[in-house]
Each structure stands twice: as structure tokens, then as C-alpha cells.
Length: 73
Image 1 (cartoon, rainbow, N blue to C red):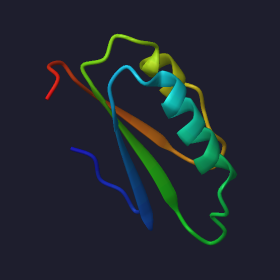
Image 2 (cartoon, rainbow, N blue to C red):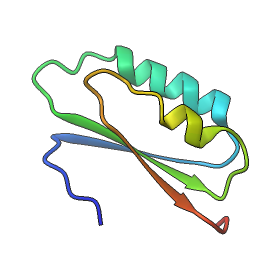
Image 3 (cartoon, one colour):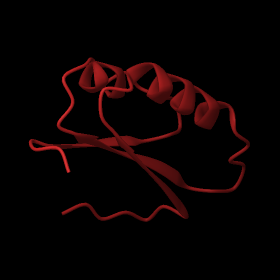
Image 4 (cartoon, rainbow, N blue to C red):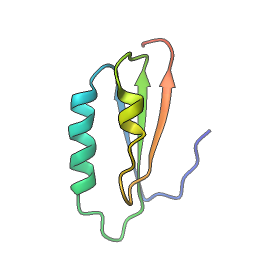
């Protein structure tokens, strides 16, 4: 179970959409988060692309947590 002290948690559910996820994470990294504790939770819904590698790349000041579901749905 994941617990957090974040003010804002953004949950992104994805499956084989690594390019879209990359763009979304990039936009979130550029967002004004002054004074807020934020985190990203990526839920990989049984994908087969490079999502785990992308999520493993650090975003300064923005924790990203990765969860994988083995079966789509």
C-alpha cells in the first residue's frame, strides 16, 4: 500500500502509450508547483512498451511511483 503526505497526487493509468505518458510527465514537470508537495502515480495496465524505463527516469522535485497490473482491465 502506498501512503503519502502530498498535497496533490496525480494518478495516470496507461497501457502501451509511452509517448503520451512522456509528454504528460514533461508537462507536469514544467507546471508551477510552488508551495505544494506533489507526486505522480503511474498505473501500467499490463502494457508491453517501455513505460517502466520511462517512469524510472527521475523528475527533480516530483516523485513518481510505479504500479503494474499484470492483466489489462
